[in-house]
Each structure stands twice: as C-alpha cells, then as structure tokens.
Amino acid sequence: MQQLSRRAFLGGSGIVLGSAAGCLSLGSRTNFDPADWPVPQADAGQTNYSPTSGPVEDAEIAWRQPFDDGFYASLFLVDGTLFVGPNSVERSYPAPATHTGDSETLYAVDSANGDIQFQISDLSAVYGVAGTRTYADGVVLASGYTHSGIGTRRNHRRYRTSGLNPSGGVAPRRWIKQRLPPRGWGEAKPGQTTATAGGTWFYAEPRNPMRIRAIDVDDGRQRWMSDLDTAGKVISPADTDRLVAAGPPILLADTDRLVVVDTTLNASKLYLFDHDGRELARANVPNVARAILRDGAVTLVSTGKQLRIETYDTETLDQQWQNTIEVGNRAHVHLAAGPESLVTTVGQTDSQRWNSENELPIFLVGFDRDSGQQRWQTTVPETRYVRSIAIGDTTVYLGTQHGFFSDPSSVFAYALDDGAERWRIKSKRSESGSTEPVWRTVHSILVSDGRLYLWDGETLVALEEP
Image 1: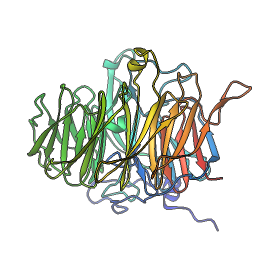
Image 2 (image 1 turned 90 degrees about the vertical axis):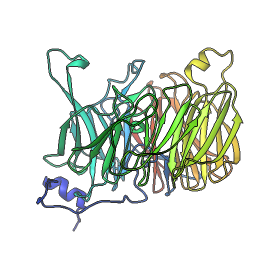
Image 3 (image 1 turned 60 degrees about the horizontal axis):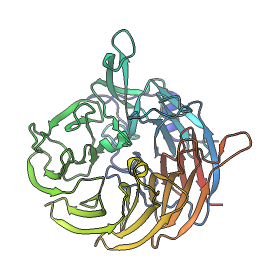
Image 4 (image 1 turned 90 degrees about the horizontal axis):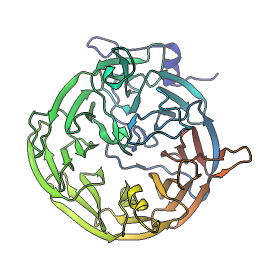
C-alpha cells in the first residue's frame, strides 16, 4: 500500500492548524534537511551553498515543467517540494515581451518528476520557507495586495504579508497582515532584502530602505520596527534574534548579531548591534556590491578599478583579511561561500558595456575563505551576463545569459578546487523557433541531492548526472 508523506496527508486532507495559544500544534521546526534550499539564496546568510552535490561530470535533462506564463521567479526547495513563485522586482526597465508579468501564483512542484502538486493564487511575491515554533513544516512567507480605490494605480493598492501552508490544503493561508511588504530594487531580488532567523522574518521596506521590520513567522505579528537614519544610527529599539543587513538593502541573518551596512553614501558603514538594538561596533567599508554571512564572519565585495573582497568578524567587526585583484572595467558581481571557499564572478554592467569600445569577458575567481588568498581564476566563455550562482559540494554552477532577451542562455559547471570547467549546456533555437533545452535567461538555480534545478523565465528544469 502506498504511504502518504506528512505533507501530502496534511495538504490532501485540508488540515489547517492555528498558531494561537491553546490550538493543536504539529510541533516546532528549527532546522532544515541538508538537501533543502529554503530561501532563494540557500540560507539566511545568502551563501548560495548546498552541502549536497549536483551533477558533477556531466548533466542531462531529468524533466522540464513549462508554465502558462513567463515571470521573474523565486525558487526554493523544502521536503522534496520545489516552490516557484513571483519575485515582484521593481525594475527601471520593462519585462521582456514574452513575459506576461508576475504570475501572482505560488506553484508547488514534486522535485522527483516535475508534477505540479498544488498552487496558491493572489500573491505578488514569495520569499521562502521559515521554520516555526508551531508548524512542523514551517510557513511560506509571501506578500500580495488588493485595490482600495478605482483603477489599478500603485497608490490604490493595499499591501499585505502572509504565512502560507507549505502543504497547500483547503485554507492555505495561516495568517494575513496588512502592511508594506519587502520588494526588490533594480536587479536585486526580494530575497536579498529579507532574512529569517529564530522564528523572525526581517525585511527592509520598499519606501524606506533603512526601515527594518521584524515579524513573528508563527502568527504574523510585528515584533519590532527599527529606523536607521542617514548617519547609521538606530533610532528605535530592536529585540529578538539577531540579524545582518547589508544595503540598501541586503539582509543576512544568524543567531548572534545584527549588522547593518548603509551604502547610501559614497563610503559605506558597517554597524554591529545586539538583539536589543544596542550598537556594539561600527566600521567604515568601501561601497558594497555583495555580502555573505557564514560561520560568524561577514564577507563584503566591492568593485572599482579593483575587486576588493574582505571579511569581518561579527563579534567585534575586526577585519580578518582583505584581498584585491585587478578586474579592469568590471563591476557586476555575484558571490557564493562554501565551508572553505569563496567564489565570485565579476563582469561588466550594462552602462560599462555601452560606454566601452570592447566587451570584456567575465571572470570567475576562487578564494580561500579563511585567509582570502586567491586560489584560481578563469574566464566564463560565450556569455554576457551571469544571472545566478550556486555551489554544490565540490562544484560551482553558473546560470548565464548570452546577450539580449532574444539570445540563448547557458548553464556552466566548474570544479571548486581549481576552476576547471566540467561541463556546460548551451541552448539553441529549434526549427520551431523555441529555445531549448533552457530558455533565454537562467534567473534562479539551486542544488540538491545530485540535481541542479533552474528557472529559465518560463520553464522549471531539473538537470542530473547521465
């Protein structure tokens, strides 16, 4: 007889358990499985790392699940279920014509075969799964809006945040609160403006990037709100678990500290706070392009004529190490961190490319995480943009875009120890005019138990070892 998983049973039976005192509880969830990828950047430190492996020596398509609409998506995985939902990025440019906009739907997909298990509608963005004290499967953090007046203009929207049942069910919303949600800026994804730790969802407001909200993930109540002025001083108290914020506005979380990087000025400042919002230390740092938190250290990357990478201890903000490499006219970076390694890509921004006589190739660079020493450097061929990066055990994966939205894309795999290329999958146009096996831009990738999952703008794709 086939046995249902706990998720399948709860979702199919429509059981919904409240979080109020006295309600029946499934018990707390404090940890995720090593194969899980609960938020778009793998964890609250945005390390883009999985201790499990993806395809190493080569890769082929395990399955493809196309969707009716194309949209910019957040992608995460928990308990064997892939969640695909809109990321609601605020952009200064229109979406490509083939994208019909955000789907406003969260899809739950079986990671084994790509079958859609259920969907939840009326959402403008999803941010990941958070562990809770009340629900054994946690909650999916999301946001949406309704229209409060005539017309559909943004100033007529009434925004709300919500905690969703990861198993679906007949009543999938465990809580709904009317408040401004997080959103992305430019190329940043909303996941870079949010983090969860210790049952608290931290995020920066879209209208005031230096305002941090702390939300209880069990019931949606606001625990605290903290404003940071232009000098970097917290002017209202904070409590609960600690948080790292690099901005505006990247948030990174762990269980010990609150760090804020204010990059609104020409020179950034790095601030260290305790759980109650008391300032413990501060440091001047260069303008930050990317930040990662892992094992009590925050790593910052800044660009100019050189790429500068440095790590600070989150107990004292003492600099542990610093390294610089010559990168020429390149300033577009991505960053990932494993237990012993840091990997960054650096290429040209759009403005650098338009104002340059020659396009420069993208560098992929590996560093020792403890010392900052450069281990290796290689060039990413036949691509104009790196859109996503991930590390799986011993392999670095890149999702790229060759050029404009009409051009194909590629997925690359490199050895983590020396940067040697292991394999690549390059898309080609078919006779029907479609782009296969991967569409035009690989926006999101994640690694889990021998597979690489990616979102290419309209299709969810699983790659595995042949």
